[in-house]
Image (cartoon, rainbow, N blue to C red; front, side, top):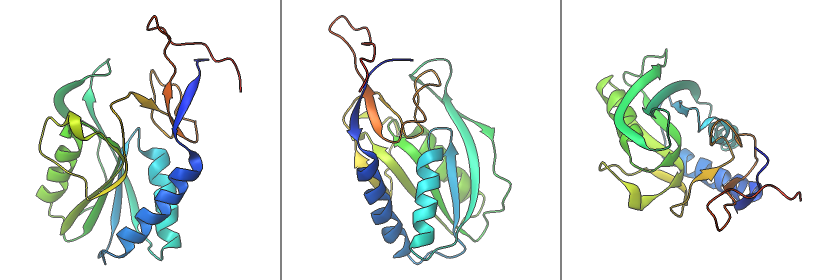
Length: 187
């Protein structure tokens, strides 16, 4: 999109936190751990966290679920739907749901209830970012990478209009005084 993105959480900061989160997860003594990444926004975080879990001595199986509470905008519709479901049976297993942002809580609560209803022994949640002042439902993440200010963030898998997912950091698109995004000046 050609706009400047200001770094909120650097790649190095995120990498260090992923290592810490993996150690916290390893300390939970999970059984038959299945990591379920909530797509699309969590794919980069989930991949890095799974590699950190390996370094922490864990060998989880991995699945992907695609859920949506957004239509064509940036505001939740309130209704969560399954776009793509997992293939694995979760009955009797420990499930770790990995998501990018815990904001309204609708998506995470839906996924957590879904896994529990399918017979998961334990359902844990891990989010990269938490915006605690935006909850529409009562749900807390078991593990949180960072508390995030109430800003629209991009990068590290998160997007705006399918742009910026590739950035190795979490950032905020620079907006000018007139409300228009400022074009990137390079550097």
